[in-house]
Amino acid sequence: ELERELLQEVRNRTIAAVCGQRAMPRSVWQLPAGQRRTVLRHLLVSDRYRFLYCYVPKVGCSNWKRVLKVLGGALGSVHAALKMDHRSGLVFLGDLRPDEIRYRLEHYFKFLFVRDPMERLLSAYRNKFGEIEEYQRRYGLEIVRRYREGGAGASAGDDVTFSEFLRYLLDEDAERMNEHWMPIYNLCQPCAVRYDFIGSYERLNADADYVLERVRSPPFVRFPERQAWYKPVTAETLHYYLCNTRRRLIQDLLPKYILDFSLFAYPLPNITSEFCRQ
Image (cartoon, rainbow, N blue to C red; front, side, top):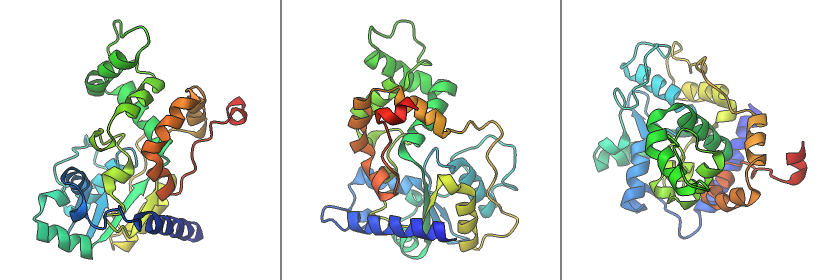
């Protein structure tokens, strides 16, 4: 599969160049404690198949967690119609002892999946603020209170605009963000952890099949199709939101996610007037 190999090559070279700079961490043990805790909490372990998977919310991670549960014997089938429990039946690298962590980082196949950063943010925004009450209460109310021109009024936190959300991200410390919008760089630390494969959300099923083959997963374990209720973020949707957001706001936010664009070979969002006139 030529396309996959070329993309890996580009990503590997970029990561080598960026991570080769002096200030960059060379291992998880060189990270400040908080950053180390974050990445170890996001690395899921399969001892039976000897791999580590760094999960990134909004990049197919619920389905990968199902696969891990099936491989570990905690779930009978990837199609089991259960509400996803994001903790039980999973082993997190951070729960192991330092020597066990070291061994697995050195010897296991390590992978993660990435996605266009703006698309991931839009997906998180639409899902969390459009559908999930807990997020509307926990973050929405605060965002509206802080960023709505003319005050929050009677908002229940369920009407946060995309611009208000981006302004909130601009003021947040990347290392303390909720995992659904924390930069992938901070979640998975690709300088400190040498990943063997970086899959793309854009080719999720093909790349997932490749990984399952690499780790010699049994043939009955296939990566599940997207749920029927899943609302994809199309190019048109992204175009609509980007072009209806103040250009300056997007430009100001880019530095926070710049490593996700550059390391994983995603173009910066096109917000030129020509593009937005289409």
